[in-house]
Amino acid sequence: MLTAQLDSAPALLRRVEAAGLRGRGGAGFPLARKLRAVRDAGLAAGLAPVTVANGEEGEPGSVKDKYLLRQRPHEVLDGLTLAARMVGAGHAYVYVSDPVSAAAVTAAVRSRTDPLGIEVIEVEHAYVAGEESAVVRRIDGGPALPTAKPPRPFERGVGGAPTLVSNVETLARLAALARGERTDRLLLTVSGAGLLPRLYEVPEGMALGELVRVHLGDTRPRGLMLRGLMLGGLAGGIHTPAILPAPLSFDSLAAAGAALGCGAIHLIGPDQCPVAVVRDALSYLAEQSARQCGVCVTGTSRLAATMTKAAQGVATAADLDALERWAVMLPGRGACGLLDAAARLAGSLTVSFPGALAAHMAGPCAGPCAGCTQARGSIAVPVVPRTAEKVPT
Picture 1 (tube, helix red, strand yellow):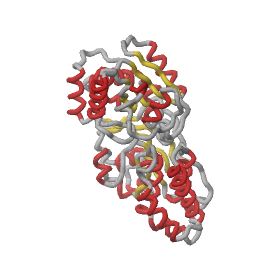
Picture 2 (cartoon, one colour):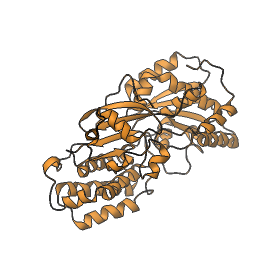
Picture 3 (tube, one colour):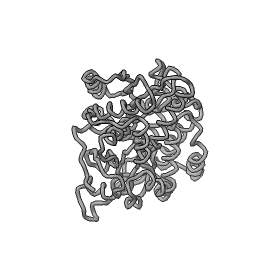
Picture 4 (cartoon, helix red, strand yellow):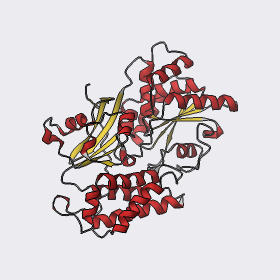
């Protein structure tokens, strides 16, 4: 817990802005801008804002938030308390779906003497349950499903008050900033390529390829025998190994046509088929649709069905043209980002692996990719570690 003399709320807000601290939930939105928006909305409305630590880790290939909540809950609570001070909130929530995390945070809350009221809210796990409007809806007693926007939670959230919904890693980094510690560290979950998933804490700006070398346990070139990788979770798209020199930062990866997202990296080994990997991911997203938006239900199911046809070797040229068209037309048409994720994933495959899709028109892939006609589910949820492996600069 924080023990040092803290800056005033305005001074700390200036430090957050100067440090360039960004959200670690996926979008990478500047935290200072979000804090100011909630604070100003509360002042304008004459209402005390609400703060929420969002620990509903919907991304199946990520465990960083569960790790923080289970092993370092006080860091999250410190950040939540600081955020509440900066926006003028009098009440806060920790929103989780993992029962072990909920128990750890509840015990941590009971051991503290913070004047801020903190309540732990448990929710059933779902890919969309961590979307910020779904968080607000669930805390207010409704289902954990996204709502149409506007208003956004910073304008009108829990109980009608302006609400800050912030990822738990973001809040942990905020606490680190207040303690005078480094904030340019990233928690990244790496899975795939037939290896056990692992959680790493790495310096921002480290080359993606260096992290992959560490994970594969081999510094020689043959240690980078990958067919591709998925970056930023299911929403980040699929890429060829040409992306490996890119630095691990929001802006650098965006410039390279990729995304850091929630920090989930899935490696595709030489014996795997990228078409099958995307087919499985799209099938998962179609199953996870909130089924509130017709365009999302139809769009995700068509993307999944068409990619399944491709994996089975029965897709036509018209099917592949439709994938490219949907990848452009569908983003932005749903109430949340699930449809965007599905469209981006399909579009990235058509760009990064056009040869693989074209080859599947002649029949199911053979050789090292044999068996991709059978769905194998989505990316498995890794085991939550007791410690994150620190990768030095």
